[in-house]
Length: 339
Image 1 (cartoon, rainbow, N blue to C red):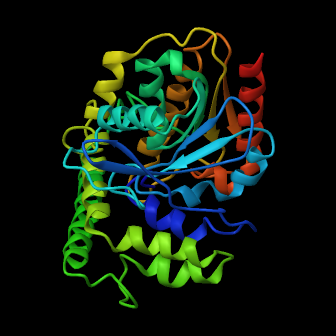
Image 2 (image 1 turned 180 degrees about the vertical axis):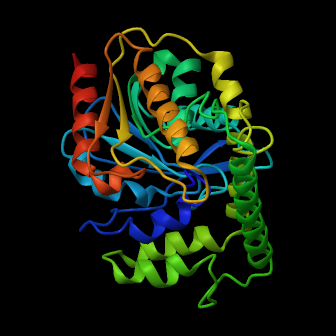
Image 3 (image 1 turned 30 degrees about the horizontal axis):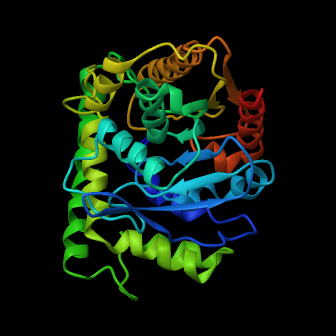
């Protein structure tokens, strides 16, 4: 199962089953150089919780946890460069570039620090690197089935390697095709294509407000979204693709700054139903799953108060499958941070 490459299409089709819509979904903040990032904050209390979604995802992915968390503290959701209502960037989507953008956003948006960072999937690696570089700005961490440095440290046989490389190239080609359609304006309005069908079909069947539908449709119809998808995947995948046991650029950047997190509260959540790719052997799947769990355990040990928890009956998007588990992890970290 692809962890990141298809997450946008999977998540957009299931993220909207909660009852309440965001009160406002667009608030642009200048982070310097004339670039703006979109950020939405709700609730009251301290510390503020800042959410970092996975690859190609959106602030709507946190829909099921928004209201419960806002009941006990302030929370902020934002779009990375190229996504949602945020401006595009000429810089590649690397972990360091994402972290520096977020750091600038916190300063210009006057978000009170230290904050609790909640990162899902690739957003988990970004949150980890942020803590590496700016630990004094971080009161705690909740990492939801996170990507991590070393996740590709798995030996894969030649047949499985070929299958993974073919799958990667097929996905990349689909992103390039969507990018061309978006550049030609063919993903706007009522134009139908696999690139924007989640916004046009799946989401219309759920309890989304008109502004949320417009937000998702805007993201999926813009060329920078597909440019970003390709850049995110290029920098989070190992050199040569997922089939090669080598470090990714994002992973290398995190390793360069890796540090102890001291005693800050830290919870790492792992999906109870871990991925299984039908295109590769069970031996490869088992090795990937073992490495995934051990990587999460190592992340948790970087704080003396770290916990590594498996969330039963959940897949990669734990915040959608078992939102109560994510909310309780956030609550625990917030309460510990207040002490």
